[in-house]
Image 1 (cartoon, rainbow, N blue to C red):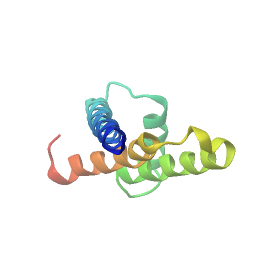
Image 2: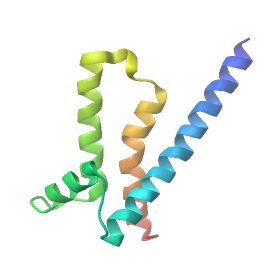
Image 3: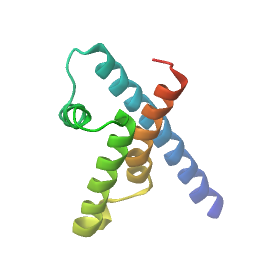
Length: 102
């Protein structure tokens, strides 16, 4: 029984990491193409006009802020994948910047 639960958790975390990586890659490609962006990325790009930091850092901050609000309003909605996605998007985008992949 414990092995079954741990293997399910492993798969959920693995797929969450893969999905977060692909979402961050998509966001990065959209932003560098300058062909438009989703609402949150547009908001982050607007913030970047006024402060000198990276896109990933602002994304981390805003996603953490959203996670805190949801935690106090409806904490049952937050799971492992929510935390991975909230922090992973910004970290993966920062990794792309640091490694100069895109």
